[in-house]
Length: 305
Image (cartoon, rainbow, N blue to C red; front, side, top):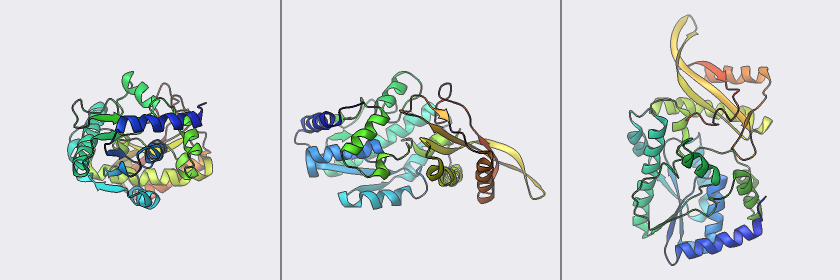
């Protein structure tokens, strides 16, 4: 448990000291981590905070529109960089290389936007599990191990770097953030790119975006998982109508967890799984097969890459 009042007070002081008189750009994704950082920084430096949402083209269905609606009152800047991210991912299939390419592109876009605003500092919502997994060699998070060595920013401010996800949610509640944000499911910084095994294309992203939306639509309200999503595993043989097809294999993943360091698969009734599988294969003609992942963490990670 975190002493939220003390943490908020100390974090505001830390941000004020780190920023000095400079303007600060911050990565605002709409998740609880970045939203807590935005709330803390707004109290600390006021209108010298420049919140930026980057649409990477790898976001969930309707995500950008949702972010515009929720954060429109704080002068959020939305940057459409989808073509840039797909270009840097072209031909890359190795998960670590993907994450590093995405991490570097994020920084380059933020640098470009910071130059326009005369900002020198970057603020981001890195949390403790990001650091553990990156530094421990499990996987490079885009905002830790995926960041380039050379950046234009004079400082990177990470006020919640020592908190676990459940502690971040406590702070969100103490800051008075809406429940929708406080309890929102985690979504990986690299977005749907790490839910597509192998190389990333616009077609694959479109498939998994729709499948992911179906999984969330079927499971979030009814079962309240800590996290649920769909992942594109590759191609397999299937039959649609009287025709044999080579179609995509989609995995459903749903887990419960406290802080993301360990996780257990959600027990979903078989008829519910059948319903999800039927919706995915019916609504997405290029999908031939749907499977449910029952692996805990460890030995698996929650995401596939």
